[in-house]
Image (cartoon, rainbow, N blue to C red; front, side, top):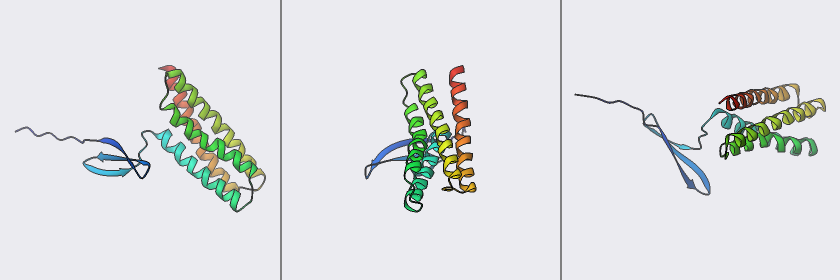
Length: 150
């Protein structure tokens, strides 16, 4: 008698209350939520969430609107460009979008350092954000190099 054992993994997207949810079967268990397919999507999205929360804090608690708005734009643009790259029309288009995300990462680091230097962010807060930026930056550089060599 033959026995087969395998794990069936797949994702199905559905709309619920105007939000895309995914049904995912992983190792025989049903999971419902939003699942990102790669590490850079996940990290850049999570970073964007941190930036939005930081913007709210800076504008509501510290009454800082100018620098925080700049940070909001570039810090959330990283993930937006990564997401857009996933639908690139060509390899060149993909590399271009990832390069834009990389540039936005550099700008984000600038605004974080400036917010720290002007005492809107503590050393610990800025170091934590900068560490995330550097991690994202390294991943983006690797993606660009790998994509160019393929």
